[in-house]
Length: 208
Image 1: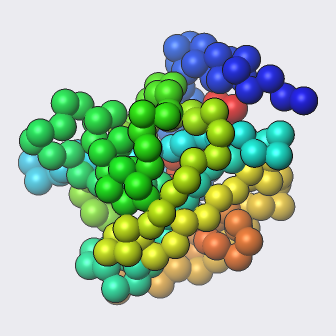
Image 2: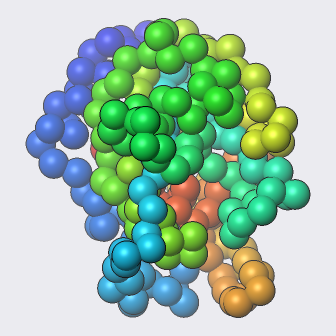
């Protein structure tokens, strides 16, 4: 049996020692953008946002919930897999508060039942001009989540053991109005986790 309390303490210690950042994030970037991704910098119009990466135990494994954005949603990330999150509001105390507030709004997460472990490396998402700050948290039991239909089409989860398996990483072609390119992604029961979410996930898996 895994001692999850000790596992979370080990994760906290690992974060305090320093994060892998770009070294792990770049693994999930398309070769089309890899040489210049981190040369792209925030600008005066860049907004800040927070996302919540929630760990919880189930069947003696750590799991993470993901959301699927509605395909009808406006913006470059419609129809994509993501972590719960959104832009920072003026009333938010900090980016951790942003992540928690957005998780409450999008998946009705009871944030009083979770423990914030720390933050992973911020990531500039040039497609939407957001600087995203991931907050890592832990729930002692599987949370009861319910999608806000205006923001979330579906909620699903993956266990860490599956995500760490080499065969989970595959490649696919993504087509947008501006580009068509091949990119690595995590395959979770046919769900494609790519882009910024995959980059943040890559760092998490290295920390774990």
